[in-house]
Image 1 (cartoon, rainbow, N blue to C red):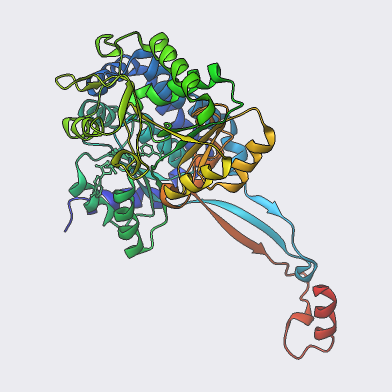
Image 2 (image 1 turned 30 degrees about the vertical axis):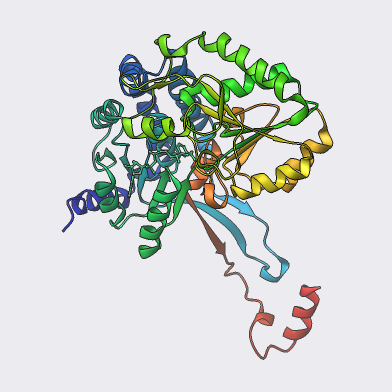
Length: 456
Ligand code: NAD
C-alpha cells in the first residue's frame, strides 16, 4: 500500500462532503492564500535568494507580484465564472432547457519545477481552489528553501485534507502519479511530461502539461533595433535565462546583425553592469549539473559577448554565441540559461523552415514594423503564444491563455483559463414534463416529415 493512499482518501472524503462547492468557501480560501503570501513576504524573498540568488526586483515582478494579481482577479470574477451557463436549445428539443454546470474534478495533483518555484506551484493552486477542488502540491526538490517554505506556509494555512504539500524527487512524484487522482497539472520538461502522460493514461486521468522547448526570437530588417535589443535582453537574461518562455535563440536578418548585437551589448551593460558576475544581484544557475551542462555549450561557436563563468557561485554572464551550425548541440536542446545563440536569415520563408525544425515552440517573438509580415508569422508558424515587438509580456496579461501546443504542452491557464482548466463543463438538458413530442419516437405518423423540416 502506498504511503499516499490515506492522504488521497482523506482529500476525496473532504471533496465529497461538499464544502468546497460553495462560493463563500472558495473566496475565503483565496483570501487565506493571499494573506498567507503577504504574511510570509519577507521569507519568500529570503528563500528565493538562497535557492537562486534572485533579486528583490525579480521576485516582485515574476513571482510575488504575479500571484497577487492573479488572486485579486480571481476573487473579482469568481461568482460570475461559477454560474451555470444557459445555452440555446434547438427547436427539435422544444420545451427543454440546456445548461452547462461548472463541476470541480475532485482531488488534484500539482507538480512544479524549480525555475519559478513559488509562482509555478501557487498559480495553478489558485485555479484549483477557485474551481472547488482539493490539491496536493509536489514542488521541486532542486529549490529546497522555497519548497520547505511552501510546505510550511500551506501547512499553517490549510487543513491537510484540503491542500497539502508533499516533498521529494522523481520517485515520490511517480508514486503520487499512481494514486487515484481526479486531475494532474504538471509543469516541467518534455521528457518528464511524457512520463506524466503515460502514468495518467493508465487511469485516464485528465491532465495539463506545461512544458518547454526552443522559443525563437526573430528580428527582421525593419525592426526598431534599440527597443528590440532592450526587450530581448530583459526577456533572455531575467532569472539568468532559466525561463520556459525566454527567447532561446536569436534569428536576425543578416543586414542588421551587427547593429543589433552592438545594441544588445549596450543594453546588457545598462541592465546588469559590465560584469554581472560580481553584481550580487544576478540570478545563479540552479545546481552544478545545470551549470556544467551550460558550460559545455561555451565550447561551441564564437563567443562575441560575455562567456565568463564562476563555478563556485554557479554564475554565468549574459553571453552571445555566433558562428554556430543548426545541428550544433546548443541548437538542438532547450538552453534554459543565459546563453543566446545568434543565427541569421535573409528571407522570411527561411524562418519557417528553421522554426519548424524545433517543432511547436512554447513561445515565439517577432520584431518588425511590417504588419503584413507580422500576420504572416502569426498565421503560418505553430507556437504556444508569443509577442510582436516584445518578449514574454504575453504572460503578464491574464486575459490571454498561457500554454503550449504539441511538444510544448497540452492545455492552458492564467485568469479565467485557470478556473476552466480545473473545471469540468457538465452539459445538462432539463426536459419538460408538460408535454411529450411524439415525432422523435419510431413509428410516429408525422415523424419523418417533421424531422426533415427541422433538419433543413
Ligand atoms: P523537470 O521535468 O525535471 O521537473 C519538474 C517536476 O517533475 C519536479 O517537481 C520534479 O521533481 C518532477 N520530476 C522530475 N523527474 C521526474 C520523473 N522521472 N517522474 C516524475 N516526476 C519527475 O523540470 P525542471 O528541470 O524542474 O524545469 C525545467 C523545465 O520545465 C524546462 O523544460 C522548462 O521549459 C519547463 N518549464 C515549463 C514552464 C511552462 O509554464 N510551460 C514553466 C517553467 C518551466
